[in-house]
Length: 170
Image (cartoon, rainbow, N blue to C red):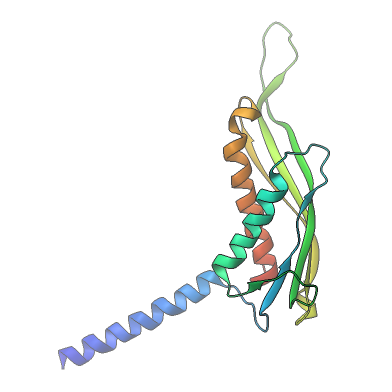
């Protein structure tokens, strides 16, 4: 009798674990088989040379790793995602106190990346959207020494936001 309860408990745990993973992923590509992801050109006033390529490839990788969608290069795709990088800016995030009546200086700065996205779902038109996504990260010191860690982190956050809006209805 103990073995029947053990097997039953194991089956329940497997189904519980599977349902949790489905809920955690939360992605719904219902009815979609293909997606065309356009090149996200950098139209920001400040152009980081590799940002367009890095962002476009990160978005493709996010969709490839989490869905079964085929990424295609045709306008007849079930879904189309296009856009551009419209902002890449650095601004003061906090002010550092100074002495002797010297003007205040930035204690920390914020790097912000903004991306405009147009997502067209040709299967479920109500899921289509056009939206701006923006993320910031604070840093201290000079941007050149930290850009190689800040930019990938911001790209990851923005691609996650775009993915969730398109496929997780967030």
